[in-house]
Image (cartoon, rainbow, N blue to C red):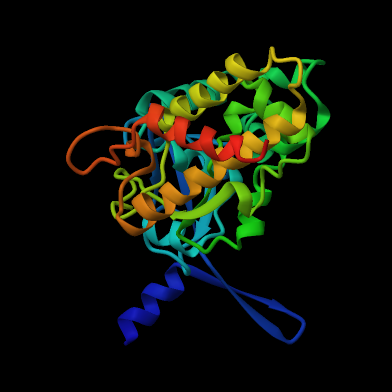
Length: 294
């Protein structure tokens, strides 16, 4: 017991304010390594958020912090929540070495890494397009609202059935938003467990999902090609199709990912342990539901 008390006091400090005692646990930093890894380092004296430091022999940036009193590992810290938006975004791509290397280079070339980290990711280039409505831009900017609306628990991530990245690329998605499609609500979202092999979150299903995104993008584009030139096309049609597409994807995500444990990016892949969804079949079935409204 004495040994534990000594260990605890070494890793904490007591601050007296008035007649109250406040016990502060030491803070262990999250670091982004130049080699493309995101790690939780057990060294409260390493530095402050935004500092460029050495972890062993490797250069790294401190990108976040978490109290060691609350968590003893990256996995536990993530499950308990409380990590910064910047770290959360890195967690989403934590198994994509090239993407993390790119993030490191961005921090290494910016004039103020600390500001970059606290501000989070920069607005995408399409935010400067005057032909895209403010409503569409606001939907993308407020993506974190989905987590609040879904009351996402610690250890889970709020997944957009129709990805935010598609807004800037899809005229149909933009028209749907203009017509009232609510991107960051339960009509387009589901809570899923995080997956990150590098962080030990191996029982999750949600991580970076570029293949899934491409399939959804192609469905939106297919609808655009088939319908936007029609004389009776309007934004309400885009909204109706988008709602049908989102509802179908939420159903598949609930059954295949949430219940059966198939990773989001594997839903449209073929083979054992994959989702085995066929894009053409899914699209045609969605279109049948869409036609029933007309």
